[in-house]
Structures are given as C-alpha cells and as structure tokens.
Length: 447
Image (cartoon, rainbow, N blue to C red; front, side, top):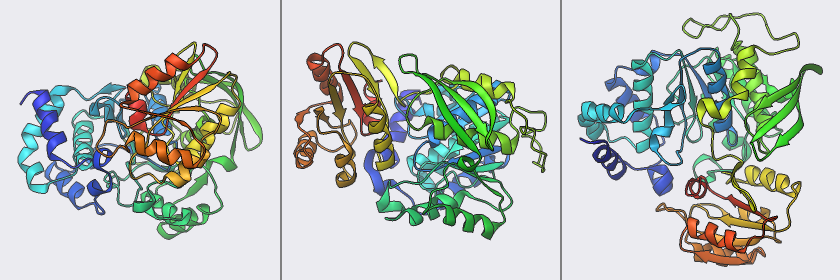
C-alpha cells in the first residue's frame, strides 16, 4: 500500500469521532486492550505522563514535551485531534511519525484491525504506543482524547496523572454536571501515582480528592502552590513573559514562554507543579527507572535549565499551533481553538483587553454543540461570518446564522471557512481585528 492508500483505508474504514461525533465513541477499553494485546502491550515498554482535563491539556502536553526534549530525553507526544495531518497526533522529538511507519503498521496489523474493528482513535492509540515502544522513547507525554476513565489512552501506568481543569464539554457523553464530568476525568488517577490538578475548583476538587483517597494516590493542586503574573505579552511573536511565585516566594522573576493566550498562565502553573513532582530536568528524574520518593529539589528560587529552555523554544521544539495564533496583520488575524464555555469566556475576556477598531469573527461549530451555552458568550458588537467546517458533523452555516440571530449576533453565512475569512479580510480595515474561533476544525482550515 502507498501512504495515500493507507490513509484512505483508515479514514474510510474506521469511525472517527471528530468527523461523525458520538457514534464513534466507544464506552469501554475493550478494543484498545485487544489491539495492544495483539501488539505485545507496547504501553508497558515506555514511561509516560498522562494529561487530561477540559481546557489546556493540549498546551500542557506540548509544554511538558518541550521541557523533556530540552532535558535531552527522547520524547514521544500523543495528542488529538489533529489540524492538517493525522500524523501530528504521534510525534517523537517534535517530528511526526514517518509515512513509512504508518504504512508498515497498517500492513502488518491489518488483519487484526479488521477483526477487532477499532475506532480511528483506538487505532491511533495503538499505533502511537507501538511506535513509541519500537523507537525506545525515554518518556511519552500522552494526552487524553475525551473524558479519561474510558478513554483509549487510559491503559498506561504513568509517572503522573495530570488534570488541567473541568468545564462543560461533551455533556452528552461525560455528564451534565461538573461533578459528573470530573468523575470521568478522575478516571486517569491511579493507585500510588501522583495526581496533579491544575485548578482547585469548588465542584470538582472533592471528586478528585475522593478518587485519590480511594486509590491511594498523592494529590497536588497546582494553583494552591504556584501563582503566575503576566509581565509582558507580545501577541505578534506569540511570546509571553511571566513572574512565578511558589508558596508565596518569588521563584523566577522573568520566565519566557513561546506561547500566548488567556489560559496559558494557568497551564504554566500546572506544568511547573508537574515538573516539581517528577523533578523533570534534575538528576533525580530518570524515567527509565521505577520512580521513587525524592526530596523536593525545587524549593529554592530558580528552575532547572531544561524547563526555562524548553518553554522558551516551545514552538520550535514541538510545533505548537492553533492556540491564540496570529496568521495575519493589518488587519490582525488571530486564531484560537476555544470551543467550550470556559474556553470561549476566557478568549472573549482577553479580546476585550485588546486594542482594535472593529472586531470581525469567523466562526463555526459541530452540529452536536449546545449553542445555547456557546452563542451567548459571543460579543454582540462584532461583524460575523458564519461557516461550516469541512467535516460531516459540521453545522450548516445558514442554520448557525439563524440561530445566532436569536442571541443578537448578525452576519452572513459562507460556503466555506476560507471564503468566510476572505470576506472578513475584504471588509476589515487595517486597524480592525479578525478572530477565527469556535472549533478546532474551523481553525484547522486557515492556519
């Protein structure tokens, strides 16, 4: 098979959540376990860190991967979904899995794939774990796809389980209250494995504490120890400088992170607490060995050089994209993958702090999105350009336009995201801002 034939076979033959939604979601780990058993259980042959949560898990995963790479570790990174090429989901040291490795995996395991009938996500997890094991990575940063308890990635025994935060998203699958959603996310917390929680939220914290108590896992809340202040944010080059406090004491006065956006300060606290617990970048961190209890080497001000270097070279090392990303100037064209309540609230709060004349918003949603929660968050004084993402579950632009009018959002529907962006550019003045937001699949079509 050629690479194109292989991709066509995978995309046509396996149910894909990001294309068809809930119909592709498997509410058990049976297929993943069966596929990985066939593969020789590759997940047992490398060390890992598991990252879940509603918002920020992708950013935290990329930051941790960059730090591990800067520390000289051969670092695997598994993320989802992808923007342009599904190979983005599986990387080692920032490089996508080679086309040949994809073809070889499918040809070698095609009979098992057709017998087990995994979803596209389940197949990707098996492919990633097999690739990481074969390439003998020192560490793999593994992002949860959806939820946690029943997510296909939840067959690993990581060095740490990290949960960024909890918000309303995928409620048809995870539950309609924050405690129910937290219960699903808490499913990645495992016996004796440190758990790092990014935000100590009122409704979710008790759920995490109870799960940690139940399985005997030490639990840490990053925001109770780390305080992050933004010193300077340069949107055009995508870099932000922070002042970091740990336990009320200045840890580092000027930390540069090669990323910007409204969630990144919270994500940074989560990353630093994970670094602290695992002692990444210090001689005590040896991911090939069984982790043992170590004294806190980060009590004194300062951070290991690998942490500073990895965060400063984030996009270079791991090709971080799609989050608060500038793709044009005069007018400023900004893309962000925020798509749920918490993400949209943070994004629009940030927009209100920015300097521009008129706001133009290019947006689209999946057809299973609860628009009654999303659309009220959008500013009424913007010009809107509604578009359908080029996926089967994309919401038709004319339907979105009608629904948006109920919430005072006026604009026109367009035949594609690219055409919507072209229309926005034609109408926008040089000092205006164009924001592309609402779905990762909308953003993927313009970056």
